[in-house]
Amino acid sequence: MRRQGWVLVLAGVAAGCATTRPIPTAHEAPAVAAERRAAAPKPTYNLTGYPPAVRDGYIDGCESAKHSQYARKDAARFASDAQYSMGWNDGFGICGKK
Image 1 (cartoon, helix red, strand yellow):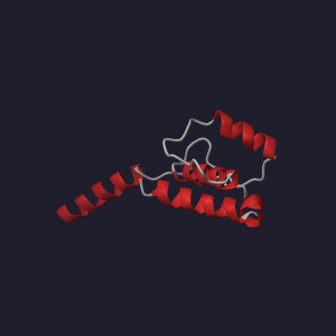
Image 2 (cartoon, rainbow, N blue to C red):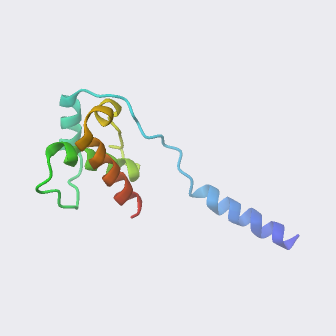
């Protein structure tokens, strides 16, 4: 009986930590994406020297990993632009560990 009580308490705590927000994957126009990134809070990491596509992908991937309001994955660009997809994967992987 006592063990079942602890299991229920731990299950309740774990359920309270769950997130339910999906990561948007819809394609958006480049002008809309640029405007969204301009309005996004400035990242705390240094991306100087990387191509713009890598920076865009990194920011999108990092914001997705953090489940922020700017979370997104441009599916069309991810499929067609190797630099964007590399940046997105790097951003998602690195920021997801924080």
